[in-house]
Image (cartoon, rainbow, N blue to C red):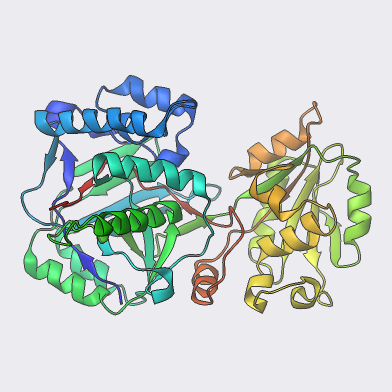
Length: 443
């Protein structure tokens, strides 16, 4: 089962690098060109200088060779400093849930987890991956022999036993790092180097499966790198051995855990007609108007469907004066209507009802189009999606608004060896990169 290990993390020395809020960033895949420029302008030592993807047209090897040179200079100059003792790092994030404004604190901890093939059943994915991001991250790992981003892993712990052990530190001592991101998210990290406390956490984690909540590409990159190094004769030794990856572990039962929906916006469909679509949907869906297409009405409609039984969606369409609630009829069984393989649990996911019964069957948007975002874009903010559809340019034809996928659904699908469609889960907030780094032991 799961094996976790303490490690000698590499952290910024604020006395030399400056304040942490100028150094840490969103994960690499969330950094747009504009955000990258903002980060680079904030500090000469922003972690963005190391983790960002190679600029378009730049060779990966050459780019990341320069990154490695910068990284090693920072280590030599003491900008980055390695802890002298193996530690685990409790990591708390206090934030307001988008939409409701509810204040929550998600509690986890950063440690190393042993890498396993998925066939072993210890590490369970819920999404498929694509080759492009893995090639980019693999070249960064090869160049630096380090892991910068945290893999977000869920583990079952209904009694909260692991966090109770870590509370001895987090409840009594101030954090080693505290960063306020924007105006609403506070990130705090502690350091636990007591061998007895670490051993207690290791023992509690040993009997549990792990589920990848976020970071499937980085997990598979770490596994590929381990195989490369092992084949080259690098020994598996030390706390920071090559058969491990830096992971942030969060209980699937943590009350601070939030999953947000990702909404679908349609564009570029030939001969699209909302009246024609509604006519096609009437066979399997109850359709009801829920008010004019305003942000206020949309918020109320989403709140309503969040507590309702069955599969429900909200539709907004350009030029249509009403938001429409779509409710799958009791007589419409997704197990029968959705062709092909898949468990009943998988077919009943809201996102699969949308993809299979509406986007694919009624609008002829193929799975390949969905994967490559042809005719469909994905947005977290419902107000932003609605604004696109109600805009005067008519470029965006319609938007479908979903409920969030439940954590229990994620675990069930992963336990069944199945995969959710792209953009099915959005665990919020993201974990910052640069809070702690793992430098691998190459012997």
